[in-house]
Length: 236
Length: 236
DNA sequence: GGTTGATGATGATCATTGTCATCCGTAAGC
DNA sequence: GCTTACGGATGACAATGATCATCATCAACC
Image 1 (cartoon, rainbow over the protein chains, first blue to last red):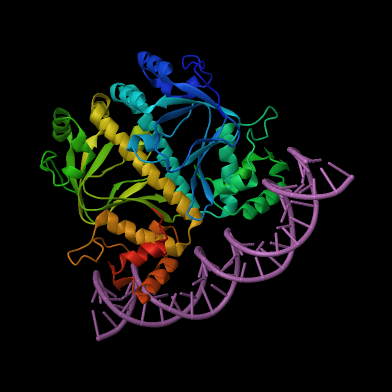
Image 2 (image 1 turned 120 degrees about the vertical axis):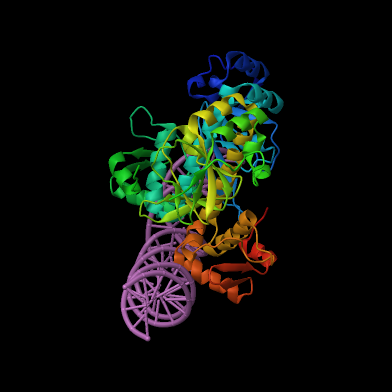
C-alpha cells in the first residue's frame, strides 16, 4: 500500500515556506518533526475517508490532494484542492468529530501525519501557531462563503471559467506557461464547479472553440486568461 | 442613530453561556469588558458594511443579525444568521482585510464592540480563547462546505425545507412551539436558500398546501418538522 | 488483433427554476 | 379618503442546465 518513513524533515521540507507549520516556534516544530510519520500515496489512494474519526492531522509534503464531500445521492463535491505545505483534516480534529470530507491523492503524493495528542498540545502552548491556524481557517471560510454566493448567483459558464482560473492559481502551470499543472477528469472538474459532467464537457468545448483554452486529453491550456476572467465576470 | 453605552456587563451578560468570550480567562474577560462599547441598532441598521476595514470585533448582546454578501449583480446572499452570544466580523479582523459581508440587524439589537488591538492581544495570550475561536471557525467552515454541496446537488424544494429547519435551529420558536422566532421577508428567505424570491414564495405556498407549514404574513409556523426533514432529504 | 472498460463528446429531450408581468392587500402619508 | 409604495402571490414564458442515449476514443489487457 503506502510506505511510511521518517526522513522527510520539516526543517528543510520543500514545502516549508508555504506551510503553516513553519510558523510554529522552533522547539515545537522539532517536536512535531520527531513524532510525524510520512507516507506515500499512489494516485487515487485515500488519505482519509469521510465518516471516519481523525487520529491526527496531515501535512502535504509533495503531490496534490483533493478534498471532497459525498452528496446524499453519491455524487462528489470537491471542496478544496490541497498542495504541498497545506494541512488537511484539521476541521474534524479540532471539533473532535468525524471527517466530513474524504482526502484523495490526485497525484502520487507524500503526506506527513502528526498524531492528534501531540498536535493539540503544541497548539495549546504555541500562540503563534494557533493564531496562524486561525487565520488559515478564517481565510478558507471566506473562500467558502464566496463560493456559496457564486453557486447561487452565477451561471455554470462563469463558474467554470472561475474554476479554471482557480486551478491555475492553486497548482500553477507547466513550463510552457499555459498548461494547468494537474490532471483532472472532466467529472472532477464538474464536481469542482458544482455541475453535471456533460455540462462541464460542453462548456469546455465552447471555451476551446472561442480560443480561450486548448484541450489535449486531460491537459488544459489556458490561452487567454484575460478573456477567461471576463467570462468569469469577476469583480475583485 | 445608535446609542452607545457601557453598562451591559460581560460577566453577567444574558448571552454569556453560549458565547465564546466566556471561554476566555477571567482576567482577560474583565479587560475586554472594560474596553468594550455596546451600541443599539434598529431593525435594518448596518453594523458593518462589506468593503469597509474592520476596527474590531462585535459580539451580539440581544437581537438578531444577518450576515450577507452582495453578489456582483446586487443580489444578496445571506451567509449566516447570528444570535445573542455570537461574535461577528472576525474573519476580516483575523486576516486584516476588508469585510466580505455586511452585518444588518433583523431586529432591534444591541451589539458590543471590542477594539481590534485589545482583542488581538488577548487572543495572543489566551490559549483557551484562541483555541475556542478556532473551533468555532472550523465549525462554521464545516457548515459552509455542507451548504456548498447542497447548493450544487439539491433542488430548491429540499433546500427550502432545510433552511426552514435551520432557522428553527438557530432562532428557535415562540411560546406556541411552532412559530419561527424571527421575521424574515420572502426575499430574505430566498437569499438564504439561494434562489429567486418567486420560487421561495411558490414553494412556501406548496408547503402550506401540503400542511407542512402555516403562513400568516411574516409569521411561519412549522407544523410538521418530521415531514419537513423528509422533504429536506437530510441524511445526518 | 481484438475485447473490455473507462472517459470524453455530442445530440435530443425534459424539468427545474429564473424572469417578466400583473394583481392583490396592507400600511404609510398627505 | 385617496394615493402611493412595498411586499406578497400567481400565471405565463423562457432558458438554463440536468438527464438520457449514443457514439467515439484511448489504453490496458488477454
